[in-house]
Length: 250
Ligand code: MN
Image (cartoon, rainbow, N blue to C red; front, side):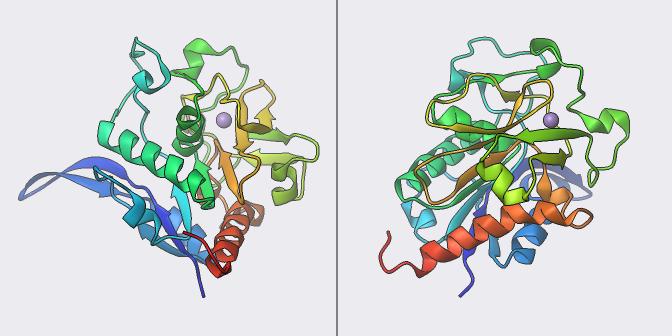
């Protein structure tokens, strides 16, 4: 039996001949990666209220990329001018989902905004705008360099003996980079899995759980050209399958 993987989308406002509408969108690359790894993707639109009825129907949770988390969520009173796209309903929904998913030991894969959300959920903080707030010789926005999304623009060095190293089968990961925010203060329960050469944290895990893993890059945009980037999805879907087949869970 294939596991069902719930994926959170991003809000968009789109204009058509018949009007302008607020909608939710998810890049098909996420769906393709989950399907290629053997899972059944479903999209979870943000909604208020309890999430147990949502979580009881999925076997794994994928927090996708997107716009910025409200800095008030991690104690920053001042919103940086480059911070954009704050969506209070999405923040609330995803924070509630991740807390309850951890309580249930549901496998969680966190991508880009997702790794930031996981860190904030567990008490960590973010750089609101890396180019202003973190000294680096690297560009973390490869769109400015004209590098295609399927191609790497920097390397991530996995911690020795880390889950990241085991997943990729290598201590050096060639990763793409499309973010202007990043983990600043790491939430104390999280473990650093890998960093870029400038020292930014780009991968984390949560010890003691079946599978909770986050990356700052976008493997779903790369796996069709660089097969090793399917491995995070394979490990995630394998964990979701294991949980699905376990004799008792709620
Ligand atoms: Mn980066």
